Length: 364
Image (cartoon, rainbow, N blue to C red):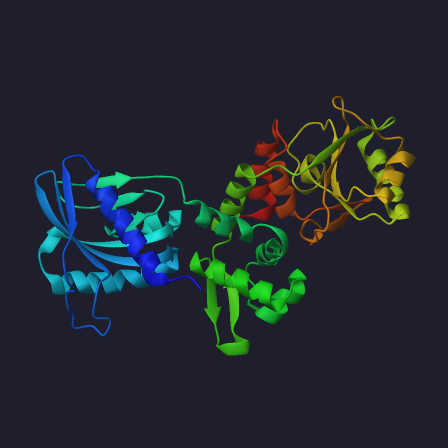
C-alpha cells in the first residue's frame, strides 16, 4: 500500500524546491499548522514566498492526482481556508499533486487558483508576480488516461459514443460492451473524473449517460495521433480495378474462410459520407490468421512494400473494432467512430475525410 503521507511530503518538497529555483525568489515552509473552523482543520502546507518584490502566502493542499471533478471538489475547501486566513490577494490557494490533467489545469486557471504537479507545471496567479510554467503531463497520468482508450475499456467507450443519449446501468453497459461489470465500472469511474458523464439513481440501479461525447472523442483522437500505429499489411490484388466487384469477391472469400472483417478508412468513409473523388486502395480490419491467409490467396493477393491496392490492419484478440459494424451492400463496414479513428492514421487526405465523416455522420 502506498504511504500517502510520504507521497504528500514528496509533492510539497518538490513544490518548495521549484519555487526556490524561480528567478529572484525565496520560499520556505511556515512552521506548525494553522487551525480553521472547518472540520477538516488543516491545510497540508503553508509556504511563504517572496518574488518580484511581493510577499505571498501559498496555502497548499496536496492530492495524489487531479482530474476536473477532483479539482472542483477541492476548490471550495481551499477558498474557505483562504477566506479564514485573511490577507486578501496576497494569500494564494494552491493545489499540488503528483499529476494534474490538462482539463483540471484549465479549470484552475479560469478559477484563478494555483497548481503544481511533479512534472514541473506551476501556476501562481498573484498580482505583480504571475507565474505560469507548463510542462508535459507526467507519465503516470498519461499512462492512466491512455489505458482507458485501449483493450476492453475502449469497448465501453464505443458503446457510450454509439448511443450518447442512453442511460446505462453497469450491468447493461457491460453486456453491450462485452466486458465484465468490473471493467465497465472502472471505466465509468475514470470518465466521471473527467466530468464527461451524468449520473442518476443509487446502488445497483445507478445509471450514467455520456454528456460530453465531443470531449471524449477529442481525447481519443489525441491518443490515436500520439500512439503507436497498428501493424498494417499491404497487398497487391490483381483484377481489382472495380472497387465494388473486388469488395464483393473479398467478402465472399472471407465469409467462406470464416474470417471476420470490416472495411475501414476511406473504403468505409466513402459509403458513410462521400468525400473523395476516387480511391486508390481498399482497407479493412481483420485477424492475420491462417484462415485469412487462405482467403487472401484465393483472391490472388501478394504482399508488397509499394503499389498496394489493398491493406489489412491487423486486429488480434480485439472485439472493439468490430462492435456496431454495419452491413452495406456486399460488405461489412466498421462503425463510424472506428472508421474515424482509423482515418486519423491513414495519411494523405485521410484526415480531411475523417473530419468530414465526423461532421456529417458522427455529429459531435
